[in-house]
Amino acid sequence: MMGALEKLPGVRLLVVGDVMLDRYWFGEVSRISPEAPVPVVKVERLEERLGGAANVARNAAALGARTALLSVVGDDEAGRSLARLLGDGEIDAGLQVDAQIDTTVKLRVIGRQQQLLRIDFETTPSHEILQAKLQDFERRVANCDAVILSDYGKGGLAHISEMICLAKAAGKPVLVDPKGDEYGKYAGATVITPNRSELREVVGRWSSEEELTRKAQALRAELGLEALLVTRSEEGMTLFRDGQTVHQPAQAREVFDVSGAGDTVIATLAAMLASGADWAEAIQVANVAAGIVVGKLGTAVVTREELQAAL
Image (tube, rainbow, N blue to C red; front, side, top):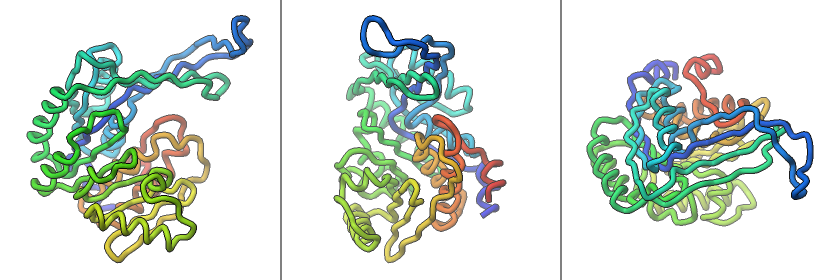
């Protein structure tokens, strides 16, 4: 396993999907507004972080993998902020600029350590831009060891089926973080990584481990996947393969924030598989990474050094 970790700096990952800018406004709440029954937040500090597929790329880069990212942003200040943050993270970003859209921004207003309000700005990208992104993908896929398709349901992966076909034709493993309840478009991927509630949306509820296994294996077979990894919060994570189920119990000692944990899992899984680890090793390390990241506040990352120490 340490061997696979040693090889991470040689791994090349291509991340494609919906990027967003996570903005945080931190402030003091000292009174209720005279205009309406709402708190008044006096903003004292602003913070910007990479979100969505950009956070997946940031996680992959933190592990030492050479990371490229393909996505769409608007011709706006948020898009330029994203480009700058990606540059700071040493991520090779191919951002298609669509003047017709606003870059997706999630603005969170935080007072007294609590999220008081979240405001979302988003538009679906135009078709021509997505076609250009597909051509860029075709060029880049030959020079990577694994592909991560990070679907946040914002419209940036309209051509996901074609991307899976192109990556498979080039012999590259494809890992998908799915969204919504239409999983047909992910057919043929190497692995998809839904969380508990995402899987429930697609296969319905289950009342026992046996029923979960039956439903998960049926979905895996129907989509022609090599594996299906279900992340299950405090229940850890379970990998379903042909005739095999591997479970990893949760690792976290203290949970501060689960946001972005799925990004860490898929980035770590892709990096480990690309560096030659087998499935059992890869999910063990991804599980340890998730345990570290939920102990940090906000969308955070795990470094290779932290992983080595934890293992």
